[in-house]
Length: 171
Image (cartoon, rainbow, N blue to C red; front, side):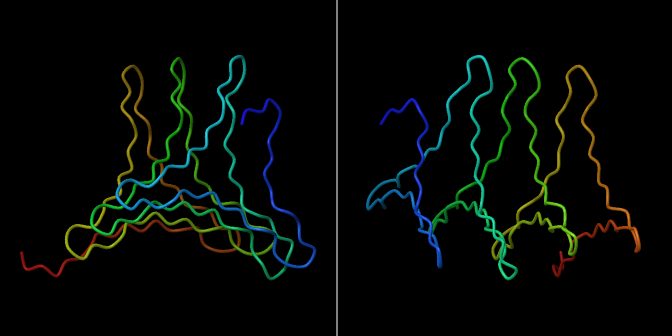
């Protein structure tokens, strides 16, 4: 289907209940690879390229919370699970794009959202590593790594704790 105008696919509203659910799925493969789902936007000629926006639902309920955005790679029964890759765009003539992962500010009461960067445990082998790296500069300064905790207003400022792992090995 080729349309020059906009295309909107949606479910109907419900006055007292749950809105309809929408699924985009590919079939399972019996002997072969599962199908892909690609979402792509058009390139810009004299202006910006199109955006891909994924947003979860808002709620005005006092007992509910906003919808989650869940990105999960595929599991594997007999081999390695799938990867998750987030990458900014290349700037062929200037700068590449930035990558920002930010939790939102808290409202009038409560705390801002926590952020966890963690690798999984391993039952037979080494657990995963975490690397925090900046790129090398060919004609300029190398990038900085800054670790900064928040200041306190009526309480203490935050702490920085670095702890090495212990071992039960005798070697």
